Length: 127
Image 1 (cartoon, rainbow, N blue to C red):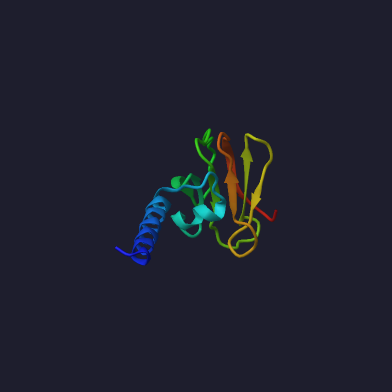
Image 2: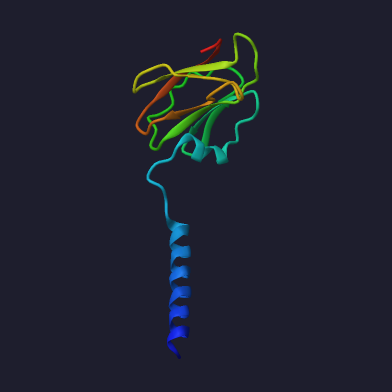
């Protein structure tokens, strides 16, 4: 085998190794955008996810509590525009009461940190 063929064979082997390794690579953190590809939240609902797994959804309020989350989760407001009842507020055990807009009106996905608990998920007016 000449040198040119040996280099080509090594290059092909290295490329194959990288391709296989990329199949098993995982990111240490995920953003809400990264998780959105797995959404199964029906239009008109608020949905709670642990990782990419839907754990609850409703067209009404959700009391919870949900958690503590083993992995990062999210809340998705997939509601319709409806004055006085189209934004979602919820309570995080890590502090705060975030507010999510309906799709097309601003941020409609809230991240739930790993280890947190979420409760009092309520529809309401403008943030």
